[in-house]
Image (cartoon, rainbow, N blue to C red; front, top):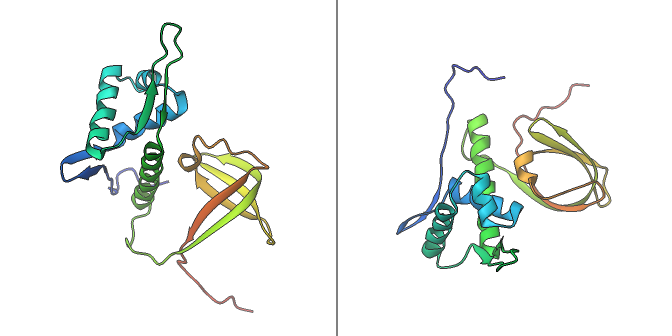
Length: 184
């Protein structure tokens, strides 16, 4: 556990164009909830926002981007209205989550900003999953290899509904911090 009196780096980020703010934690949270609930109204209520405020956030971001982030449809008298993320909305959601994870990693383990990393893209079958605090540990079977165990942040897989037996695609990066020859 870290020393509570020791300062650590903290970051807040957002995306902007030459015209200013486009996308940040508020729009990210809202789009994430729209993806989960299927409606802008429910997403706004869940986040303690008024529907009007939520709609304004989305519309301002869409105006700056020149493209829609959500597609909303009215339900009429019988109800049934809803909203879903556009491909662009889903892309912004995923990219923002990746940046958030990187910033979280830098906050927990400050060190050199540039580390040599190798990136491997693989597909694997999920053999087993175990939640351990804020992490989920997976046992994965890659083609023609022994099973491997990886641990990922719960944030990374939130909303993906992965279960044993599923095939997943993953990008793995690795950093070698120490390499020593083992004495005989």
